[in-house]
Amino acid sequence: MTVFRALTIAGSDSGGGAGIQADLKTFQELGVFGMSAITAVTVQNTRGVRGVYPMTPSAVGEQIDAVGEDLGVDALKTGMLFDAAIIRETAERIAAFGWSRVVVDPVMIAKGGAELLRADAIEAMKRHLLPLAYVVTPNIPEAEALSGMTIASMADRREAARRIAAYGAKIVVIKGGHAGEDSEAGLGAGGARRGEPGERAGAGGARREEPEAGAGAGRASRVVDLLYDGRDFEELSGPRIATRHTHGTGCTFSAAITAQLALGEDVRDAVRTARDFIQAAIEGAPALNLGGGHGPTDHWAYARLRAGSTR
Ligand SMILES: Nc1ncnc2c1ncn2[C@@H]1O[C@H](COP(=O)(O)OP(=O)(O)O)[C@@H](O)[C@H]1O
Ligand SMILES: Cc1ncc(COP(=O)(O)O)c(N)n1
Image (cartoon, rainbow, N blue to C red; front, top):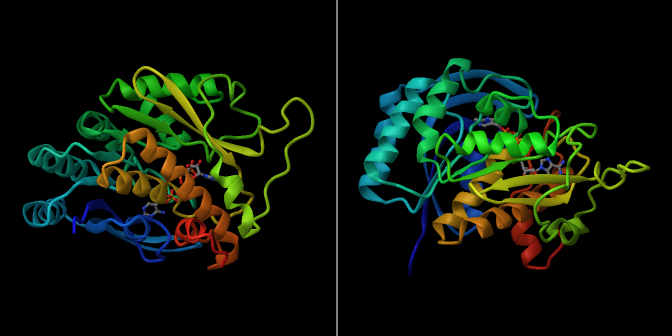
């Protein structure tokens, strides 16, 4: 039996919806053996982050070594790295092991506003980590920070993707969860649209936003992730789910890409599968309804959908 192995280098979320916990759940659901190097312990629930206890850089490096020297790594992702020293340590290890299926989720600010990456560490991320990234998956605020520009349209997003690719990341995916309905004016202007698994995933009964009336109709109801491979752009979209339960969506999405890369899937297919996975997980989130704040997504939903079962 061949077992494919994925490593996450990220922070712990005691609430279980984001960070290491979301990553390991996603790896497990996609049939990959999950391993972790913890960069920080956060005291966190659906209401927010109450505390951050970073590990020392060498403790992070030693965890990576322990896994790499013994179990082996088919693909890895990074999440919350907290500071420049942890970024440098992580980048050194990735380079030393020669790992190439590397997904960088440049986690910066939690949805509740807590700082998960020190502002002065962004330069280190650009300099040390992005050159090692096969895939980098910023949300719009993270893409703005990495590219040094404001993103108000899909044309801006394409320019930001070009700038981020210039740091050495091979595939840039700028996620659209944060895209304002009035911004992103050029949305839909470029790239092919792909399959819409969310339509199939709709059985879970999550309410979707109604499209705005008029010329913008349809835009407000969709979420679009933009993929750039250094040459071409591709838009991957699905129905935008109207729910506040989106805690850990970025972690889950990048973990799903990592799992698929560990399984040997082509990178574009890996990103498409990850969109299917996160779409199902968000559609299932309202029914989970955990906690009093921004609840976690449903990591079981994708497998349930594939098995053809409702809850
Ligand atoms: N309301 C939503 N409905 C459907 N998909 C969403 C929604 N919000 C986010 N997503 C998807 O979840 C993933 C994470 O997106 P985003 O929220 O932008 O990142 P982050 O969690 O890092 O802030 C992307 O694939 C995005 O398309
Ligand atoms: C430990 C940890 N890592 C990452 C996130 C970001 O979560 P999201 O995916 O919702 O942006 C988080 N809230 N906590």
